[in-house]
Image 1 (cartoon, rainbow, N blue to C red):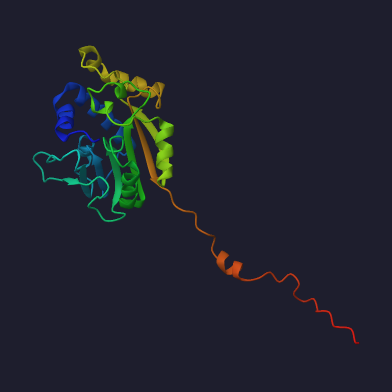
Image 2 (cartoon, helix red, strand yellow):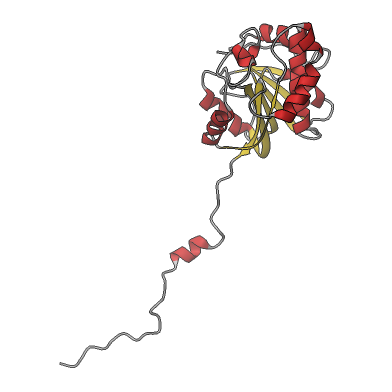
Length: 248
């Protein structure tokens, strides 16, 4: 089930560990998507900690929050862009999002298949979608004092298989949250070092989260003219005279 929006807000904005996690994840998102000028961006789950850098340049930013989680006004001091909605019924027209970010949305969903179908409906044909989920092999998924200790953690293979079944094509992946999920001063103070070292050592196993960027899978089309050729029978024997019957 989805986490409560108040718990998520408290973690990311009022705890040192949450703010450290926010910086680590956001830096990787910005490395993947440095530009958002003129594009429509949608966040689902509790993606607002990752959306703020794109507010000045994106054509539109929408933060969708599932009904089971609850909603909060965001961003503070600016026109609200957060919307409460059913997780499998987004208030957006088809093919209207150039970029979609999932954070605390997929692993806690009670209907992941229907949720991915809805995301596919909203994603533009040339759009890209970023899934951020707890890493099954990481430390963060084993500690329920953070939001990453809830829901279904994934291995990279499990996530990619699920995405392919729903019509997405995984393009690239990275990891983040290499620092331990602890409030101890040493680890918080050296968090940036562990993030940098972790990315150099492994982008798959050691991180607390996995980030997979995917696109919509496009069905293969038939080559031009094939239906026309198929309708025409082969004329292998054309030009050969038919045998004449023998006189009785």
